[in-house]
Length: 262
Ligand SMILES: [Zn+2]
Image (cartoon, rainbow, N blue to C red; front, top):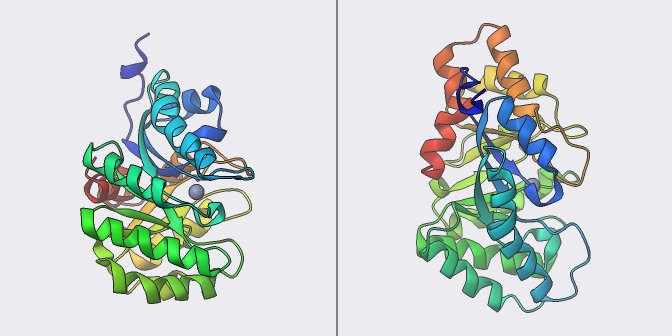
């Protein structure tokens, strides 16, 4: 059996995941369920003593996890940057590498970046990465936290347009509580369907209310409770409920293809 011809359904892109903390079995499941491409983002889930630990993490994603996923058919695209929960003191070497990775077309976005606890160093690092994106015309994937989402999102929406054209940004982990605050920006909005974060029914309710043009879909599978099949489950549910094929294709892959140029 040629697995490349096994799945004849709709093309799917999972726009935000963390491949480094997931197994080969997950990659295989995702591919067999129809996910062709996924974007893996940086986040180091352990203590970071210095910048070389973070640099190792970023290089590992780029060089190793892409290969691991590729062995199961999954085309893994990469977003690298300093996650707000990974703030370090000596950031310069990471910025230098970011310029290099962008220049060599090794990453599709800077990410995930953003704010978590609104500390001064988080805000400084966030602004600097937005400036690098502006300078290099790169996309950014912006994280919003589980707690204080409304307050942190407000701060992000205050800072973002002062540094970067909103058309280059996706604001991720948008949920029913905050979608109204972000819908009138020029940013793309990420819907994360993940246990303890948001159910597929909530994502579908958002799409139903606001339309399919502004949204990207993802699982954010990580070291936290996760479902590697949350994207296909949501897409299949949209089919089952009888949504337009054209709309489903926007959220399953077309919006992501045109936003990330992949
Ligand atoms: Zn993430």
